Image 1: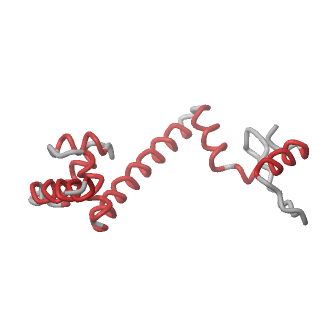
Image 2 (image 1 turned 180 degrees about the horizontal axis):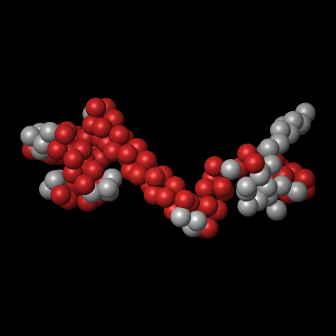
Image 3 (image 1 turned 30 degrees about the vertical axis):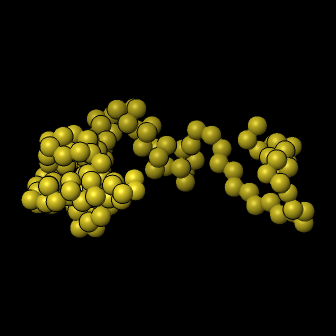
Length: 137
């Protein structure tokens, strides 16, 4: 039996072994572990690779886990806004750097450039050209 076939067989055995864990339970544990895949797998007494494989294999489970992650982001955004409302300067600066870029709240310069040439260039020539022009030096 080839190595690939052995791995597939091992995965199938693991999947069958844990077939009795409903997605709802997996997601509840995932939420309780704050989206930490390793902690979730440990709590379910399964291998992290198995949980990751299930997530890739079963779109319903993947979507349910994404909903948990979105909820965690919502929670963090709420906490950030609470800190902003309390006058936390670090939170205010973070918010402006991430959400206020269009108004000029950035740390560096963002340069968008389109360069066309009639000459075909190798990667090395293109890198040298960029250095000469002054980008990323």
